[in-house]
Every structure is written in C-alpha cells, then in structure tokens.
Image (cartoon, rainbow, N blue to C red):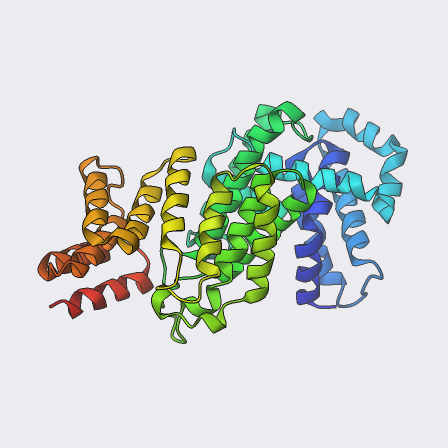
Amino acid sequence: MGTADVEAVWRIESARIVAALTRFTGDFGLAEDAAQEAVAEALVSWPLDPPANPAGWLMATARRRAIDAIRRRAALRDRYALLAADPTVDSAVDGDVDPDRIDDDVLALMFISCHPVLSPEARVALTLRVVAGLSSEEIARAFLVPVPTVQARITRAKKTIAAAGVPFELPPAGERRERLGGVLSVLYVIFTEGSTATSGDRLVRPDVAYEAIRLTRTLAALQPDEPEVHGLLALCELTAARFPARTGRDGSPVMLEDQDRRRWDFSAIRRGLDALARASTRGLGPYGLQAAIAATHATAPSVEATDWDRIVVLYEALGRVAPSPVVELNRAVAVAMTSGPARALAIVDELIASNRLPGSHLVPTVRGELLARLGRRSEARAELELAARLCANERERSVLLRKAAALS
C-alpha cells in the first residue's frame, strides 16, 4: 500500500477517527494531532507491512499516540488514568464502536469545527482539516493563501476551542438548529469558493466544491429532518451539475447562454431535485430558495425558454427571508430578462446609491451588461473595464476585458 492508499483511507475515515479520539480523550487538539501522527506512521509502515484493517490500524495507532502525549502532560495524569482504565476504549478501537454513536461523533465534530467562538476563516480551515481530512497544503492551495497562514489559523482555532472549554458533544436540542446555521454557512462558503473562485487563474475549483458536497451529504444523513440541510445539498448538486459546461478546454468561462446543456450532469440534477423535494416539506428557507432558482435553470431547455418570471418571484422571496445586496443584484438580472434592461438598471443604480456593495466587481459587471443592452456602449465599456480592475479572478477578468473591447 502506497501514499495514495493512505490518503484515500484518511480522506474517508479521518472524521470518524478524530471524533472518536476526541470523545475518548476529551481533548480536540490532542485527538487531531494524534491522528496526524498515525497518518505519518502509516506512510512509512504500510508500504512494508500493509494492515488487514487500515481504518482500525489508524485508530489504534492514533490512540497510542494520544496516550503517549497524555503521559507526557503532567497536568493530564488524572485524565490518562481514567482513559487507561476505561474498558470501553479497547473495544471501541478494535472496531466494535456503535455506528450510531460514531455518527453522533462526526456530527459533534462538525459543530465544534464551526463553533461561534471561531472566526469564519478559522471555521473553514478547521472543518476542512478535521472533518474533511485535508492537509494544510491542500487547504492553502484551495483558498490561495500561504501554508503558514492555514497552519496558524488551525493552531489558533484549537487553542481558542480549548480556552473556551468547548465540550465534545452535540449542542442541546434547543440550540442545535441555531448552531446548525453556522455549520451550513461554512459548507456554503467552501462550496461557493469551489464553484466560483474569488481569485487565482481558475474559474472553478471542482475538488473544493465536491468536498463541500461530500460533507453536506454527510450532514444530510446525520440530520435528515432538517429541511435547510437538504436545501443546501440541492443547491450544491444543481449548481455543480453545470460544471462540465462552465469552462472551455482552455479554462475560459462559458456564459450560461453559450453553454452546451447536453454536457450538464443530469445525475447531479436528479439528486438535486430529490434533495429539493425533501427541503420543501415545511417551506423553503434561504438555501432551499436558491436551490429552487438553480432548479429552474437546470430544467430549462435554453436561456430563452427559462421561466424567468418564476426566478424573479423566487428572488423576491429570498430577499424577504435573507435580504442582501447580492440577492438584489441577481434579482436585477432576472428582471432584465422579464421586463427589460431599463427596469433592471434602476435596481442596480439603487444599490450603487446606497453603497451596499462597495468594491465588488459584480455591480459594474451587471451594470455594464445592462448598459450594453440599452445601446449605451461607451458607458457600458467603462463599467466593464472598471469591473475588470476590481476582479481578482484572472479568468473572469479576461472575459470582462474582451467584452469591453468588443464595445469599442
């Protein structure tokens, strides 16, 4: 067994291993460190002596590393004695762990990684590290930040959780739904970055997006009665379904009206529609409404045949339950398709007047498109050139500059 085998097992089992170790030791940081040490040991020993039960091997080795670390900590001697005397530990490590209990452990791990005491950046880094099993290098590559920055965020996050005395347990039922919103927001951020990278030379980062989908599927399995979990899963599936057609062979963006819809992933569309149906049982929330918009696009045969009236209504509903300038901007795009660019331009100009999206390239992008449709070419060109200057993604910037040049 080589490095790829170790990485594959770790990617699948890391959350369960770290969660189980955290429950055994009561120390989130220690559990994560011990699991990482086990992986390092596996990289050396597995090519020479492949284990019959790789996941069990990692769990047992990590447990030994955790006990070694506890031994070295004089202040934790009492806890070590309790751990060593706990008869349930050995049976659990040997693979007789109650599957339902493990599922609860993974869910608790998600809630800890997304705890409100952490900054949004720390929650994302910690979730990808301890729940998804990504290395610091992988996280840094995905979010285009230096590796030391990711390592520092993770280290600070673990210290913050320890200092705050965050217990390894699911929040009480009364708090779980409120805290669930934080977990969903982290998964949404991860998926959004994968779907449309905010910077760099790639428009889409499928590995990041699919990791978010995998985590959301896990969450949906653990929390099957939460409609918004299914709403987010539906949104991710329906959006990812368009990935195969969103970029050309050279990585350049392909606009929705130019995409070859035969290349869309129809299996993902079916999964997204199924998840949307489950999200609709008690009325749609913010993620469910966005998924409904994505579903309208995904099931339309063309841009012209899209039910834009329905999309406008959905954006109006979304604006009521989760108002934001981005929702207003997207509503303007839909209004342009139903009522013409002049009415949409008025919505965009209201956003500019209220200074609700300062510094974003999205506003001048939409305004430039609308001005172009109104035949105000010089103004449109100036807006698109401004958008290009504000855009940090090289692929998007090149498209904006091409459109501006075409208006010359």
